[in-house]
Length: 94
Image (cartoon, rainbow, N blue to C red):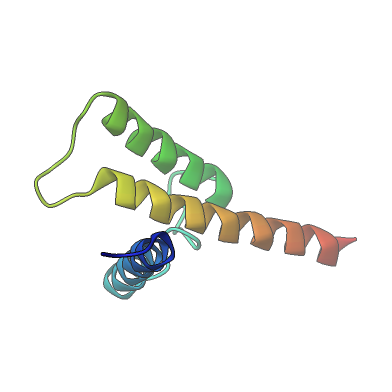
């Protein structure tokens, strides 16, 4: 039987692998978007992606190869990174 601590480690490792795999596949598009049509910050753009995932969860929509909850957890981690980056940039500008 797996302990709660082991279960937490396992799920965190899964999210870590998902984020690293998507970063290899798509580059750093979540934290450094091209911004061709939008002038939103990475933080704001991540909020939109999170809204989309929450809407899919609410409406029980997902593709066969998509784990919406896992994607949401990954976007929340990216949001924390974007927040830290924005706060760091604000401190540097002062």
